[in-house]
Amino acid sequence: MRNTTLGSTAVIVWALLGAGCGAGAAAEAIRPADPTAGAALGEGTCHEVEATAAAEPLVVDWKPEQRGDLEEAMHDGVAVVAYSCKGIKLLKECKLDGNYGYLGMTRREQVVRLSNSDELRANLPSMGGILAAKIGGEMERGATLDIAMVMVGKKRTTWAAATKDDLKGTCEGATHFIRSAMVGAFAMDTGTKAKARVTGEMFGVGAAAGSASEKSVKNKEGDLDDCQKAAPDSAKAPPQCGAAVRLVLSPIGAGAKAGEKAGEAPAKPVDPAAPPAEVACPKGLVLAEGKCTAPKADLAFQCRQGDAAECTAQCDKGHLGSCGALGVMLATGRGAGRDFAKAAPALKKACDGSEAAACTWLGVLTADGSGVAKDAAGAGALFDKGCSGGDASGCTRAGKALLASDAVKGAALLEKGCSGGDDAGCAAVAPLYAQGRGVTKDGAKAAGFYKRACDGSDAASCNALGEMHEIGRDARKDAIYATMLYRRGCSRMNAASCTSLGRLDLGGAPGSMPDEAKRVLEQGCMGRDSLACAILKVAYGDSRPVFPDVAQSQALQASCNSGSARDCAASGVFDLATGMKPMGVQKLDRACTMTDKFACELKKKVK
Image (tube, rainbow, N blue to C red; front, top):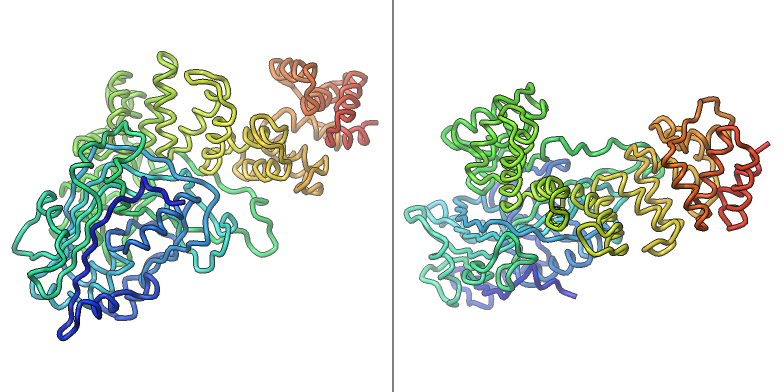
């Protein structure tokens, strides 16, 4: 099934005519066996792509069948590619288990001009080498390849980091996954350095089959008038303004070492306060004017995250993305000494220039009164501006700020943040659907939001979703999948997940590792989960005191009385750990009778 939101009707004209060649021969000459074939022509410099770096290649040169494959891959999961200086190739049989949401944004227009063979190869990794071979000589005499883009939204996944262990399918050669795709419409046409181009003019080309130039390139997809119908609050892109224009690629990590089991070793959790990942161009190039190009003394470009001196210099030159990066570094103290007073003006400069993420960060400082006067209303306005500009975390923060006063609007904004790929938005809206707060109660939707949050970096959501699958509440009952979710949450240092995993390991549930039960329960107890400490005391004679939370104990008792075997076992453990042995044994007996394997196994250890 094709995702028609991502693509729209295309007008494709490839007239790359060599001397003495007919149109049919030319068409065959530019049709490689796969998207990387152009590299074999050796035109332009093959700038090395760092395997651990992100990238933002344009995809306006992809042919209709390639775009169709991209749409299908993004519909069926999180798409994976092989990307290097030799090209980019979609791995159609490989994916991550996840999906993409859509976040509308204030419409943006941009004309990017590629002026030499190096820029063609770096920015159009699919066909850039082939185009360089055909029009490289023309470019040396002043020709350009001009790309007009109208961008109305993003399709984005919550996956922020992935390893080879997370991949599913035939994935040989995989290097990156598609974190997001900027969508809208585009028109590409050969031009000349002597003439500047504007978006409207560019969209007037591409309909005719001929060209005044012997060697020309024309490619167009989408309708400019349809793009006018897009709005930041739209749930999807207009039918003729949903083409993929630019991809954001995130690197795929190596995964577990030999002898290790995926997800077994604790992993460093993703820090939501960390600066955004740097979008890197191939080595030797910088991101400026919408393209990767060679650095020049008079060219303002996107600075490297963590390089305060470079970010300051580029911000002073007027590069708004660098101002935003500098502001985040100063606000977080990562890459520069923390200085809120200096962070605020840098973020304001970027926000005033429509850098959406900078507006969100400035809103954070304004809400806290850090470097600027504390102003809740002003912070809300900044979060809204970030959200409408396409920054999903701005939607999430705006939603959280509104929940107390307007649960309906707050929930809608949180859902919008989740759709835009912010896992914190997914984590915040999931319990609202579980409880029916601000939305119609819907357990299945809650499970879906918990999954998107867990796919990202929210470990607590992995635990919540694991519980739903363990007991079969609003989700299929699946102990193996629940164990996997608990293991993922525990590896991200979520104490409750470690405790849940320890229970299943101790009970010998399908997919569990009984020999690991004590180790993961130790992690849970060290994370101050009182149930983990109680299990360690009962099962292994641990001497640490146990102080169960009164409200938690009451909730477990009520759930036990309602027939929950899982909670009867937990309540019994607390009774045993606090010296109430008869009552504790009785609850374990009851839970074991209801086929709770953990309770049955723990009974054997009670003396």
